[in-house]
Amino acid sequence: MIKQLTIAVSGQGLHEFTSEVQAAVRDSGVIDGLCTLFIQHTSASLMIQENADASAKHDLERWLNRLVPEDDSLYTHNAEGPDDMPAHIKSALTTTSLSVPISDGRLGLGTWQGVYVWEHRHGAARRRVLLHIGE
Image (tube, rainbow, N blue to C red; front, side, top):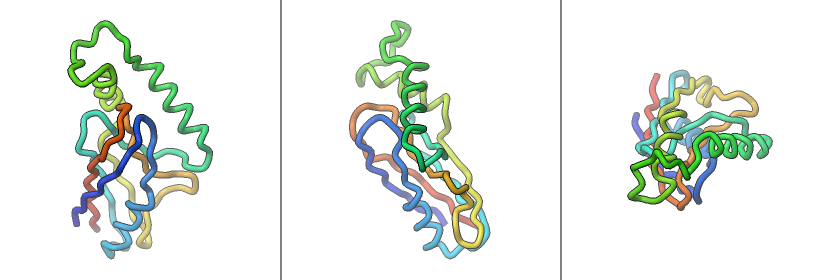
């Protein structure tokens, strides 16, 4: 089964959508299998990360922004603004797909794990994530 989710993001940062993925798994009827996620964008990525303490998200976001600054004079790809090329680099350094086991009809995530879109642009957007759910 393939399903498309549209995740509304308010701007740069980690945006959790674990409950939407879990609902799709439940609706699929798959008991034991695999859920593969793929984001259809080049300036956002996917991540499994802690969802209990917001300071983990905050620290990750600040660290990546320090690693990939917006004011690098080497960038030539800037037609869409100063956050455009840094967003592509951040996406290249992270990941655009994830695989999560399904066990007993539920995502096989750990206690403190959640699934996130990591938005690398400043503006609000609607990001498309494809799910492939199978046995």
